[in-house]
Amino acid sequence: MTALLRYHGALLLRSQRWLAPLITYAALVAVGIRPGDPVPDSLGLVSAGLVPVTAWLVRICVTVEPDAARACTAAAAGPVRVHAAALLTASTGAMLAGAAAAAVALLTGDRSGEGLGTAALAGALAVAACTLTGAAVGALCSRPLVRRRGPGIVAAALGSLLALVLAVSPARAAVSALVAAGRSGTVSLPLAALTGALLLAAAAGATACLTAARRS
Image (cartoon, rainbow, N blue to C red; front, side):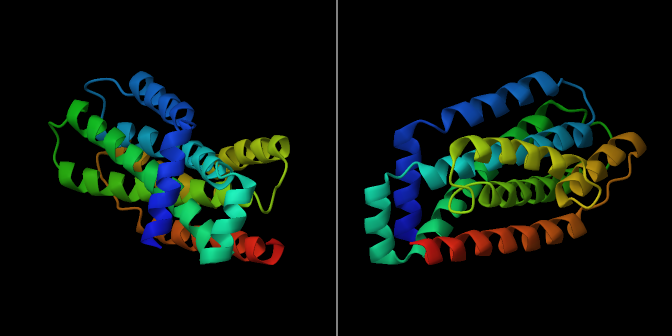
């Protein structure tokens, strides 16, 4: 699996298609975070932005490999492992971007209050929850489940929006916890949201990988 992760990482970097989602995310962070803002609020913004960005990166990672090369890779390593590696590569990239943005939020936010360490931990959990939720959206809205580009993009955009507004969404729960902490000053860890996001990402990833195996 390590070799597959390196392979997909190299494909992603060489394609330069990662620039668009990461530049968009950086612009969101630059515009949305202001020096002196409450740290939980800034971390909530950082986390929320990861849902569409991760879904975008997943779509890139599962489509960046040429069909002929993908067929060879799947024959050598198995379609399930190949597709799983693409999903993990996208999720890792999004997680790193989220960690960098969270560091900016911590460094520029209002750190005068108590509980900064708890806020940082809550932010890390929210970043993970939103990344996993975005990965689930991307996995369900990309090939092999959605083969055509146009419908896939529309589905990913709509899925990302729903993931941020539906009450049952782990991403919304994690972001809401941070926003509430910014208002009340009491930080709660979004552990339930992270657990839900893990289960959602595992189910979506398994569905996509098994479908890739059946259609290979």
